[in-house]
Image (cartoon, rainbow over all chains, first blue to last red; front, side, top):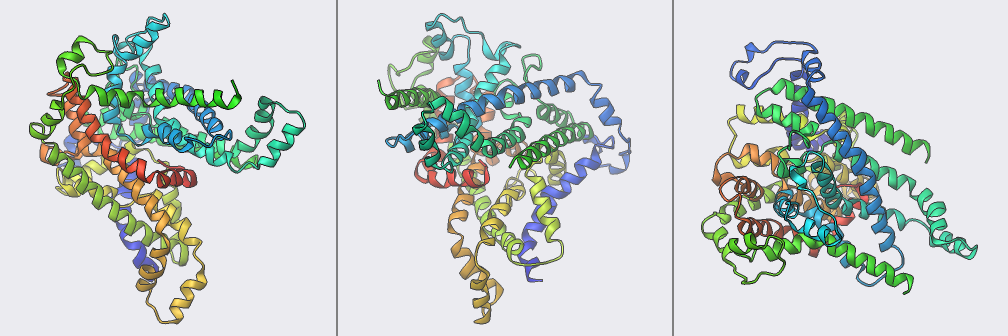
Length: 284
Length: 270
């Protein structure tokens, strides 16, 4: 009784604004619910798997799956590599300015994507600062956000910049659990820095690295904010992700179709996390 | 050159590269429109002016957006601290029917993409007649599965003997929660409070849909609409707006960063 009293406010709020929407989104995806039906619920029909079938016949949706996969497959290793590099550098026995460095690398994580987009749009212009810098080393930079080839790499660069701080902090915590005696023993045995990294640090960091990969895949599969504020999914749908596709369909009033698309994404996220958690557990 | 100085050199280059967009944003916000157009890649402002900031305060209603952001964030933070610790206490220290169900559900929703609940949430809020109110901006975020998870984990480690002793002394459950459990929860509450504030302050997709008139816009919504609308090409003004949006959060972060990083290191959140 008392326990339920403590749980009640959460249960009510969570039920109304998370659980019921979650279930009704699932139900909705098997109907033909459109925004024009909000006032006339009796006009809604059950259509079985029609929305899902239509989804996989829609070239724009299939393309958005590729775009999302591109972001995940290139973005995750890149983000993890940069974050691990930063964490190892910060953990290499330096003491001065350590907090300052950590603060600096983490700052992009806490800043609003809308504000950041304003400055990044400018940085990525044809005549912008990035291409000016590239020009100094003889590279003729592209018009990043208006190129179907270069818009995605630009999104990935932004993604790495915005997420490396989080992963760096997680990896730092992982590195600090590795006993220094191990490293010193290997050093006395004559192992070089690279050898020590690959045969001590990496194996012991395995659970942390996998945890980081799971987190990133949950976030990166939902790839949405960068294209939303930077390119509106363009040019020519080159940065239109699955989340963005669903959001656009919501905007057109195709509520059932949008729900179906979002459930495909949910299933993908759940499956991928499950596979990764299994890998994490089996090798522990 | 020693190994250590190479590490330092690398870190300095990397941190400058990371912060360059912010430095450039800050410097650009003091430039006039003419200067930015003449020299888009210029660094130092030739004739620094605070005019862009003045425009935000006088013509672009910054005060209203700021107030909205603060109200929404403050209520959201208080709600999360209270409700997440209450249910966390129930899940950690009591046996009751439905406990496993609630906990499993909380864990599952940690993985649910935002778009999944977006449509029904919008329909629900519209049906309740709440669109364009503070209630619509706040209510869906008043609790978070992540907060519940954090509080449950922490409260589970509080020794049962402590609570039993209070019960024997005749303290009521509400009193035990308020006088014993909550005061011990300082660190996780601080982390949860800061993460919730951060999430609320930067949240923009839901407020963009739920707030429909200018008097309800939060800061990111206003900046987002201005940057695609009426001042889309006035870069100095947009950069000043960006500085105004991120300055409060960066200040909070620099002074309280311990709590940010603790939260991430323990539960892996942002």
